[in-house]
Length: 502
Image (cartoon, rainbow, N blue to C red; front, side):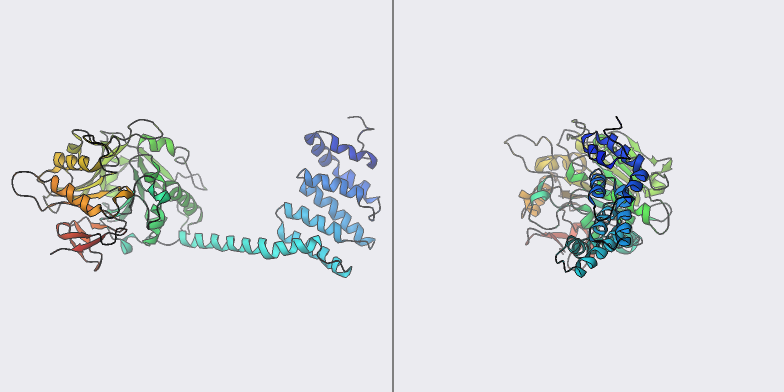
């Protein structure tokens, strides 16, 4: 650059800065700032043009610290010469504001306004800036601070599983399937299940299953928090089964940053191939100290999952997992990589002896043989999805009514079973009890006595099952009754009630 075009010692060349490359200009300003200020100090304060030429340029080029220094010297020089300090104090306030130094900016604007008031200037720029800060910025920042403090307080609410739920409970947090929660006007939209089991150390562990739309909101309404979730099982990657996962993991990160115990909480996630692809960017998350926050275990049909990170699942959670096939296409693999699962618990089977097994079909169409994957379960969570759409054809992505009937007949015909019917399309509103009764009746054996121990119970967001004795909480009394003695009241199509039927 030729000296005659731009010379720090010649202020009449400074206007050429606007004609040169941004990067060269900003480097020149930063390099020569001390010399520039020395030159400016020799100029009269009542002629702010050269000061503003560089001050404005620094602000426009995001050189806020440099602009602050220029206007700081201009303000001091103006005060010394008893000049108009309104503009330099206001402009220094802008430089402070743009650095996020709001209290310093506020003080600068007050200095500017005070001078304006002495000069009888109404509605000045400084007055408007002060009004903005007092009426909007500071109150908003206070709200943010209060919300942050509330979040930290909420994050530090102790675990309440034993007090709120108790061990060995199954709660459905699920109403409508697929995209219907996005546009439904009904109440308590959501997806998923929540399970509590005692592990071998007599600790109650909380397991979320397929946490979809509004799962965590409903979960919080039940009096539970992020501290109460220890593991997540996800059968496939669709939004109605995963929508709340990111929120749960976000709260996990905040919990690990702010919990008063200064302990890192780790959540174990068991998921399909599509889930792995969908959330791979989150699965390597660590806390502030570099500790892992998530352990992921891939679910592949045919696998037996007995440990996670070298620790026995039975010891840690009170169950092991058998991974079952599901005929349902995942978005992130574009293949039928969805899964079902069977949880082998340490609980006694109250009907047949042995140990209680819980089956979760996930979303799947019916294929011959699928029911036999669940032949040993005593509790089966059935995702119906919809009803048959074409004469003589089963659904291609969901069980539907006939798929549910075939699956039960194939796996548990004539044997005790509590089937919980869920994943309803919203077209089932007002018809969930009837559809469940149809499936229950047609899944019974044709010959011999009909088994009263087979029940198909439609799920709603507050269905609660005690797994130790397979009883269901009655809606009116909160008393638990055997699942065979529960009738469904669908007088209100939005809310199913579970009542004792003697």
